[in-house]
Image (cartoon, rainbow, N blue to C red):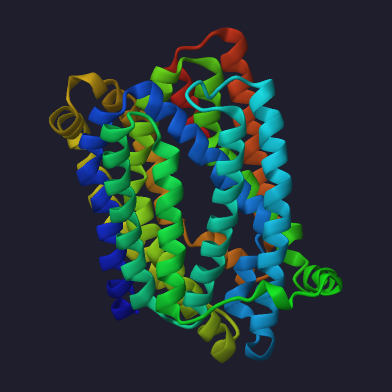
Length: 387
């Protein structure tokens, strides 16, 4: 287990260090308003990818070898069809809510659609890599992707002064091309038969039925503050809060996602051998708890100095927001692998119920904040408590 964690950890550590190291440059190239709009756009893309794939890609690690290529082809086709529909809905949303002041509506809608298609491909290839145990290739792709994005953001920021989403799109294209080459696996959608799409949906119906709403609820819960701040407060405050989330979610992205991926691989093997995955889960939970205590204690004690030193006085308000989020993010980090445990034990209904209750509580709290005119710090405290 430690060897596999080490392989993915190196790539994921670099993937998180690169944005952290380059973020001081990016925050000097782009102001809080631009940074806030970029964060809102990323949230929309994240939600769009989940809907486009219907979370069918989560089934890839447990797919049988003989039907793997056919099933992957069907999933890609489904995601493309859904992406086109989502692009149309996004266009309507842009006309109803004037939240993106920098970009042309038609231009942004097209970029959004293309981004969802690319990232759907990426998620499918990534899950295929996990199934095949190609952790080294996935590890290298993680840090290379972030390096390319960071370079593009800085170059586009200085040269064009605003086009962060173009930098993101070009980076995404390179990510998927590189990953496809390294995994030595390609998907030919020309062989798709539309009549087989329904059979694929029926075959893996539990994933759209349970994993899709679960992941949507979880994503809405995690990103509800981004959306809420954009509607309740200024884009400047959204920029400050977005920087806070980026910094504090790094430990979760670095180790939490790595241990979750390793747990997927370990638990599937242990389930085949013993009929349960309790030993694997115990190891992962212990590892997350110990490392979480160290990482989040350090962040709580030194977040003020980190932001002031690396980002300057302009962004110091982000340090204030950070103090309120750290306890809840520590809990999220420790229990990060739990989501896949629900899949292993076919207890997705329980997960769905928990996520639903959490989102309802968040929506209620946001509603109270809206009508009571809470300050943003009060909104963050309540949000952190619910998480």
